[in-house]
Length: 333
Ligand code: HMG
Ligand code: MG
Image (tube, rainbow, N blue to C red):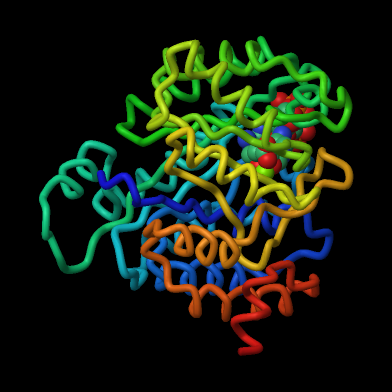
């Protein structure tokens, strides 16, 4: 992998929409995912198999997964679609749908083989990924998952084992790594490193470090990544998930890039927020990330004009302010 290649994980269809009070039509969500698929993105978070009592907006994620499996979604590059699962019940719901369409997707082994077969062109079946999500603090774990961090890790151990047995890729989030809405800046980076180590030992393929509240600053980002490095966690196993509440996401991105991280999450139009994180705004906008990374000579493979159009369209559909400076500038130019 070239050192200047950055993988962007588009989380707008899940993190971006989950907090919307008004139910967004299934057709709009599918339209969003299909539009994003054409921009050159390689990884799209598409839904969450969570309790509809906790996050009602994600309640039609099963239909989204069905749609993905039943249609050849045109894309510029091989695509991985990701779905959150907080427990075995969530994974079972996803697995039941996958079992109905066993040849409509690539397992992780097949995806890796396709990726290794250089120059393989033509249509690709999508790959599927399951995402679990723990927290670095006890308060956030209780609010988001209704259990302690230790209990959540036991449950996630089961989910990860079952997902790996089904040959699915697994992403493991750790939330509030740089600040917690309930415990402030008192988040212990060593605890983050412990949880990340546990997740990797359970078989997770990637650790996504969530700055859920956007409280992270450049020095704190650096300290956290140094702590993970000392704990033996490899850069290639880490993704950064910056929310932009305090406007620090791009600065923190530079710190992570210099540290050697090459996978970043973003949300088209800057959509988003977390239902259990009061006041948190969206993830850093995909448009801002693409423009910024390319200005540094990095290659994202993503078409900026195309994502700018989608950002304007979806924020209008959802009735949200268009939260991408670059998106607005590109469209005005
Ligand atoms: P609980 O209430 O303790 O669970 O919630 P329970 O087992 O008592 O179940 C309660 C009800 O939910 C039952 O239904 C279950 O069947 C049902 P009832 O019998 O009352 O009719 N249920 C489910 N339904 C569908 N799918 C499921 C499921 N599980 C139980 N998987 C639970 C515990 C974990 C379920 C709940 O707390 C939950 O769903 N939490 C998810 C919250 C969430 O989705 N938060 C947002 C995503 S995380 C995030 O945004 C952060 C991130 O972006 C990174 C960052 O920014 O840091 C990833
Ligand atoms: Mg988030």
